[in-house]
Amino acid sequence: HNPHRCHVGGMVVIKDTMPAAVATPRQGRRRHYHLHRWQLVCFCVAWNFFSAASSADRPNFLNKQLRSTLTKANPILCTTIGVREQAVNPLEPTIRALKFWRRVAPIVVHYKFTEYWLKVAHVDDKKKRYEIWEKLHSTHAPAGLKCILELRGLFVKIGQVMSSRADFIPRQYVDVFSGLQDSVPPWEKDRVQQIVQQSLMESQGLQLDDVFETFDEVLGSASIGQVHKAKLTPQFGGEVVAVKVMHPNAETRFRNDFKIFRTLCKVALPGWDPILRELEMQMMTEFDYTNEGNNLLRVGKNMAKSPYANKVKVPHPMLDLCSKNLLVMEYLEGKKLAVSIEDKLASILGGDRLVARKVLKAKQQALFESKHSGHQKKGFLKDLNDILGESNSSLSVLEKAAKARKLMSMTRDARNKLSLLLDATGHQIFNDGLYNGDPHPGNILVLDCGRLGLIDYGQTRSLTKHDRLALAAVVCALGRKTVDIDEVSKAMNEFGFHSRDNNEANIAKFAALYFDSDSAGKSLGYATPQKYLQHLNSIDPMVEVPDPAVFVARTSFLFRGLGALLQQQLHTSQHWKKHAKIAIDADGEK
Image (cartoon, rainbow, N blue to C red):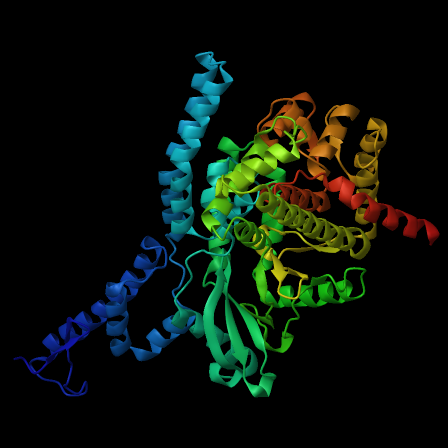
């Protein structure tokens, strides 16, 4: 019943109704009340900051109540916080590191212990070893995904790369992480619209409704930002567009996350530090969407005058509406390449998507578990019977023949699309010197018009003339029917690769691993490129790796993973050698 009390947001707040200039015997109490009110405000601010880190940026009911209280206590301060989202908690890097190692350390220890135990216990039975590792992968893959979704940031990007390397990463991780391509839980729409509103106001002096007639559902959410479908107002053309919005504080989180992951590499992934350094250098350029808009424009112009102008499509950016954390671009209607293939197979198998997915995973597993890189085949008819038997074992001969024709057509179409993707990228690398350094499966679309859609050019890489020609020499040497070790080694040295002992045979093997295939390592019994890389480094470690080579090698690895997802063993040098030769010949004519 105290008239100086009121309830705000469920909390009791003291009202100071006495003019400050009037001195009364109750002045000391008023000052106490005044101090108490600002203690509540400070408590609200602190709670919001700390709860952001502890709940991985997912606001709950209590956060909303505290924000409401803060709004009424100081509207100006709250508006600043609301528009800018939450300031970075100075303890957040430590909190994230603790969360990461709390989940990951037991996994690393379990793998290291198992590796040690298999060695000291002399477990030589391949089947038993396989079963032990399979059980371990099945146990820890879901925990790895839980850690990624809790922390997001860089770890989502790493999970995306892992999910695209079906020939490299255990299938359990590939299956569990596949949803990270564009299905990371998104931020709330109202928070995203606040960011868009702020960006438009700061760059153009415009309101959200001035630019967008509708601002629709999330098309995809990933590590740095998320994409919404929207429609421009007639004033801006009235087109349907894709709007890419950067998550708040993404850049700061990535910088801190790289420190965490660098420690993990020292513990569990030795030999990949040079690649991680280059990856960090390039990925930190993604945090300005105006750069990506300019990249889209340049790559689009290059593709428009290339032999692939009618076969591939790059979205056109609306640069006038773009800013550091906002990218507005042409909307491409289509499906991811892997999803398109799954849909076609499901149609052949009677519309059962679950069976189609099961078949594709089985074929994928058979490919990357083969010690001979998939070159040993059991025959088309047996293969066909296995696939069709999944859907209906009682098919007549004519029904099987009809499905076989559709299956062969689907396989041929998938391989043609993959070849087109490799050719378009090869043209970008060797002719244009400007290419996408992150071509993971979520960035490849099959458009309704039949063309391939190439999206997400945040990690666009450029190559100098020297880099293009040096790389072309390496690829041409690797692409010959009979590989000349001396030629490959010399080309690698001229590109900038140098090993401790200059072992030419070993350098040639490094070249094949980086720019062609993982098959040599598999034939020697190394389950992953990481193990094979460690083997090569134990013979003659590479002491100098040119920066431009790192992302081309990463692109090659990603394409091999995409090939495995589409049940095809790839040798990237075989696809790229014609583009490399064109580049060398064009330079010789000048």
